[in-house]
Length: 392
Image (tube, rainbow, N blue to C red; front, side):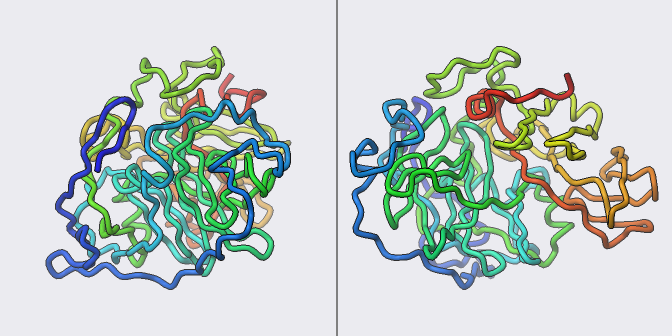
């Protein structure tokens, strides 16, 4: 099979797995990938499908002009989601370079890493983490990683790729009602569930070495996915070049920044703020206020871009980010970056990029993580037209 990607036909071919082969055997050498207990999605409901007709008169009024939905090339699930994820112990992984980006998610002490070299080819993983059914998603066209709770009232949803884009961002569909959902906002755009929104979990994209050292007992998504893909190769080489236009973006780019400038988006639908990555990387720490609440935004060098060169591991250093409430037990803290750690001025405790105190008086404490997205300016501004930019 072949995938049409950004105007280029990319052949789907198998690669050396080092932790699970594409046949589904789960073995590569002496390493075995394992399944974890999953909360299954519910059955298909007797509803009309927004995949077939998002403007069906039986649906509530769509949240968007459905005429602005664009085909991304592949049909529904032509970019195949991972429905039966298999995992490796962190110590067993040999297919990742230290600087490679992984999507980090932790729920109730259950820490998972989802390598972007895999996510780029699949975009959605229907998983269960900390006994919570979750959707773990990555949209390479808007460069955004988001994880959400798949439970909605008494339903457990599971998700596929619709083959459509809105504002150059992934549009998902749930298999229970075939409503269309925005990956960017975790909200149903069209279909019987129009207007519903799923709860999200804080995630961050960090280097493999940072995640591995922080979570030695964690689990890592295996390349044993059941399909053949050239994992490790970037099918979108050069896509994050600031001078390249977004793919199938019909909106008007907010001219305050370049379309492909990288930003950290905070305060989705509350008091949106776009923190410029170039300024953040220079300073290491920036303080912002969202809805009157002070937040601390961190940048740590050492994570490769998944969308730069033909090989994910060779991508330029864009670093990793974290956003936290800067207080412990009601005590306000201020931070500065110090090498590969962040140090608060009040106690001189050192903290890692996950907001964990690793040495000093507050060692063992953990800052409250805040939802944020590492994304391109054009995408954030399209969904958050009234966003502020920091620093001004």
